[in-house]
Image 1: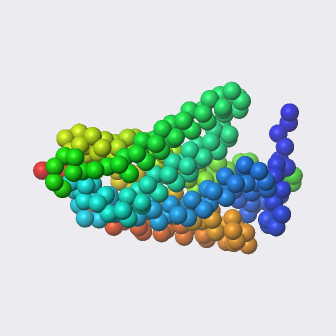
Image 2: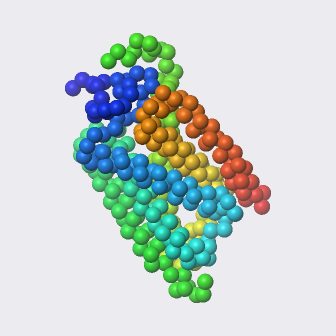
Image 3: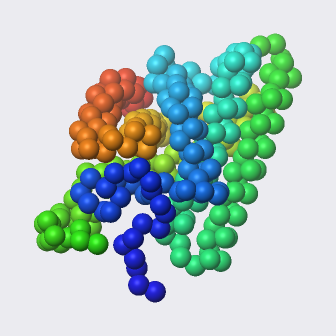
Length: 149
Length: 134
């Protein structure tokens, strides 16, 4: 089949959707799963702006950065429900945003249906296992098991 | 589609045809993949905290290494670039009229990224040099 230069999705209201010099990005999907994942990427992106940039600046840049991070640091930090909630939200949104990003990239580069399916299943399963592991640790971590904090 | 009338193939500099937006698209993709791959291992290394101080502090000591800390600086840069470029994508998606100013918005994104990396590189770089000299 010849490759078409026609947009595969409709883009009502989008200027210059015909491929001119100012045409940018992929077309916005109009319905179904692709529309919802498209929207999810943008909404989670806005939230992740604050969660991930905040996390990176606090944990890796200011103070002594990662130098001060040890068991006692985590015990103090997770003494606050606020930081547990922050880290859990970051875990969930970053995994979903990242796994969906890998799915989009797989759709772009892997043509064979079976390989696509295998790659998507692999990353989804890995993401789910890490979600379970991270969630269990964030909500059950109790430093007092190893002596007074 | 008559899109090749103004520029011939030879007018473009590279496989990405020279448009800045294509480079920011590529960097967005590369930084995104780098971040999610790091996140996979980071969830596991953080989860070790549930196995007590001895186990976790051994894992955390991996970060007391100048090479790992240089990679960490790269991670911070990747997160910042992906975030700023993500803001650009959101602006263009939700306000399509801004497409007219895409070049200016793209250059502003890169400028803000470079400006924020200056103090961050200084702060994290000083720590790396400190690790190397002690």
